[in-house]
Length: 355
Image 1: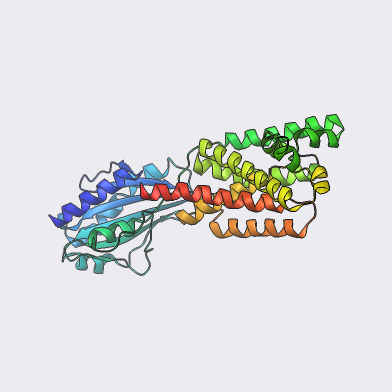
Image 2: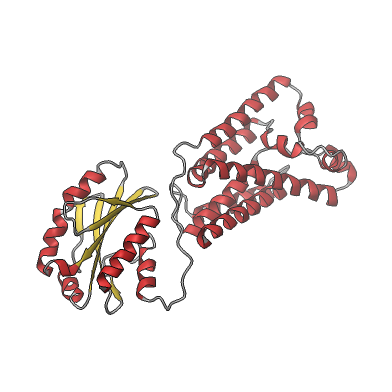
């Protein structure tokens, strides 16, 4: 009864968390598939009471053909098979016979075994096997030891859209606007019409400048640098955040960056200085995207297409430091965009954990 209760509990968890049930030739095996990042996982639940311990190695290998048919459908580099054996006192005998077994189907597929004693409430993981896979170890531990304080559920990142069309749109708009501005041959005119100026914003209430300045570039190197970073970070974030939320993050952080920059200039700079200073560029929104990507990777503990939280943090710090060391760079906008992007996405991720 305890074994069946545990298996049913895990089946419910897998069905409720984006795993797909897959049929295998042995009807007594409960198999689930999940794709996460660039990896694919197959999780198998086995009731060890159904077969003698000496037969399990043969049963596992017999399932290879079933797994291969699914692996071939996905052009993913790394594939993993996790076999979870569930039993009572007899689990130790099976552990002794299978603990050193690692099945290498080929160079891209590896299989590991975990052993769960649902009667004595113990889980044993061999030394060579990973002890963390998709947060499943926490789910098992919570079942075996419900008296423990429940951790916040682990958030797994998954692709929300295949093609980052909003990022491509932002790239196109910025580049097209730049070409149009070059045809005008009058930088001062472009700045006075579209640039962000604190006096025009707060005294003349020209609020649209918060928006238009985000898509305005005059210098070619400025455009290329911003568009390169927009593509690198924006395309990844949109895929895993979704186009709608991504659009909100881009526009929200860009507006916050511009507002903070204009406020700082208005409060702390001489009036004559404010008259002649115009801020332009997408960098505030781009730093917002970097902050958002950092919050997403840090909270989930996962990476987005090769970028983990440490890499994003270091690249953000380097970008801010370069701005501080340079001239005519709106550091207030960069920092405000980064912080607002991180905070906004952290709130979203926290709500997902509590849901």
